Amino acid sequence: HLRGPLGNGWPLDQFQGKHLILIRGGTGVAPIRSLMEAAYQDKSLFASMTILVGFKNHEAILFREDLEKYSKDEDFHTIYCLDNEDWGQWQKGFVTAHIEEIPFEEFGEDYAIALVGPPPM
Image 1 (cartoon, one colour):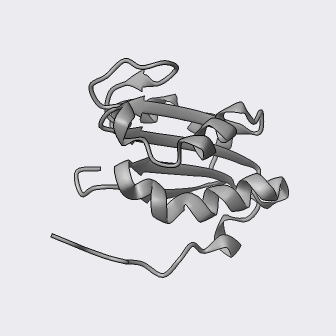
Image 2 (tube, helix red, strand yellow):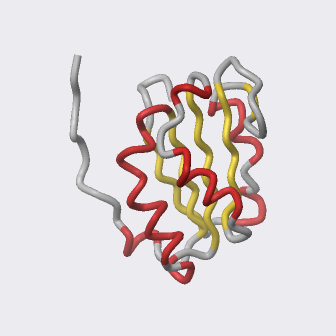
Image 3 (cartoon, rainbow, N blue to C red):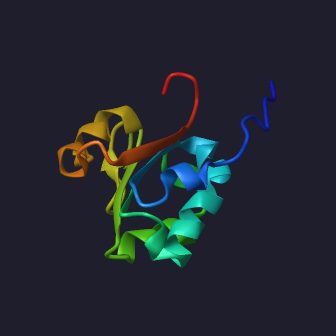
């Protein structure tokens, strides 16, 4: 079974200046990688960047070097998780179990969410 590519790209003009929240699961990291890198290269695009990403296990992690780079950047708030595995600094559990860690109350209504993942997400 193969799907995609789907969608029309990312509406950067609608995201600009807002607190951007990227929620991704598994291979959903691929289509959102360019958006993460744009935020990393130009910190003035968004008020803040929150990245929530999950994979089945540590062997399934895509773009590992990029994710490590973002987690070390003080301008990024990162939440990384693995479905059923304790591994290093990664948390255990599905992406949906970690949404409560995103500080929505601090953002007020000035935020945007980009979500990419499998249908259950």
